[in-house]
Length: 221
Image (cartoon, rainbow, N blue to C red; front, side, top):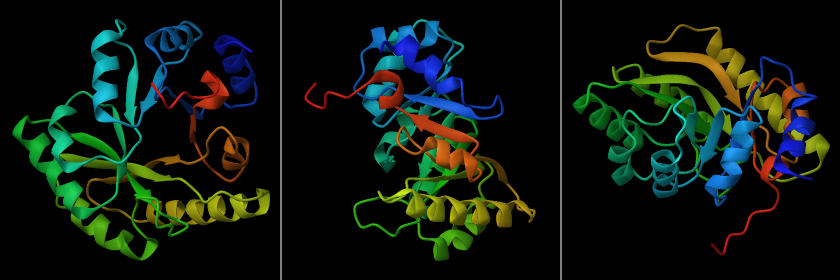
């Protein structure tokens, strides 16, 4: 199937209130253009260098660019005022650097707190028990606005997926009930190509779809 056909297939089952991010990492600008021409306006990249290159070389300015991967502190300065949403706030030290760099340019960073819901050693993100501390620190950052939560769940069967998605939705709803300075629960970003339908059923309103739109990735480029 073509990218255009994949997009039609994905969108036919997704409600209008769900934000679909086309994960374009490792994919060429031609593929992004085809997705754009098919109506996609949200694109996600994992690496700052690749993100900046694509932003600088893609002519359309009505695109929302999302940084999905782990953000190194020394790379924050390159994305100030350019990225619509940072999905991977995963430490207080990173929060402090985002605040510092955005304050210098009088900009406000919109971010999602990344939760390592499965406590996997090979994944970034904070543990649930550290979330309250992160929120307390976010309250003091005038140049950072938390817009929700993000999670990449452990690989498993449907029952396992539903459990983790349900757990994330409970956390999301619990925070939403409270009132925190600089913290909103607008987006619950969870669900990817293999499980986004389950994620939506369990409360996700933002899904990240790469292979389901662009096909298999070539990691050798």
